[in-house]
Length: 141
Image (cartoon, rainbow, N blue to C red; front, side, top):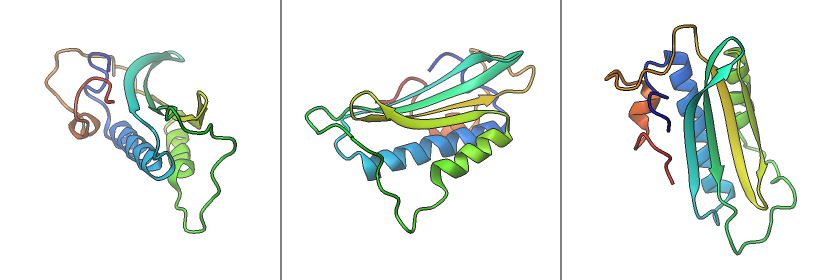
């Protein structure tokens, strides 16, 4: 993670980011048991006239496994999952995309616009809900 990426996030952005990471990890556990690693990245990026939090959760190709050839079938009891998070992200003015990555991996990428004045603040002690729920302030593998 880039320095300050998770500092001083508004509550809605922090909560949505946390839910995106949790849902992504849940989906890796359910649908990609051969994945050797999951990379989680968070950084602030230019967005329109301001800045946004960019989250990506990417599972590995699962070396040695067959390539994913089609989307996994829907389950009858499936919840809102990524579709619900896409709606929530769009309501905040952002976007969420999920799809194949590499030969057999999967990636969820979300862009959550931050209000004016929410610039990166390296060195601040204030922590957000998303930061409190992550193990490290670096890419988790």
